[in-house]
Length: 51
Image 1 (cartoon, rainbow, N blue to C red):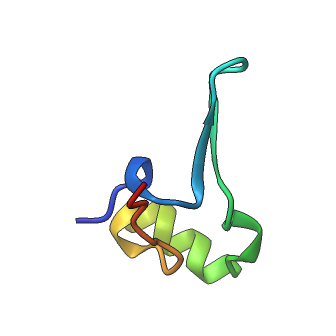
Image 2: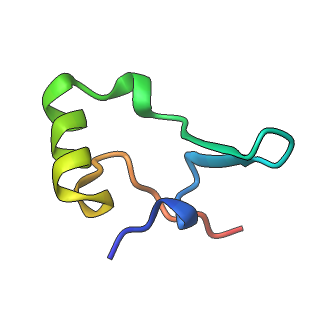
């Protein structure tokens, strides 16, 4: 199962306590709706961070 925390496009800013997907701006409205409705497993841009 995909998880944003293990995605290389996902980052967390310790100074502000916020997290963000680096590919969010590349998602279409339909892709964004699927992501928020059906969860992280539907993210087309997920790529596991192996570092």
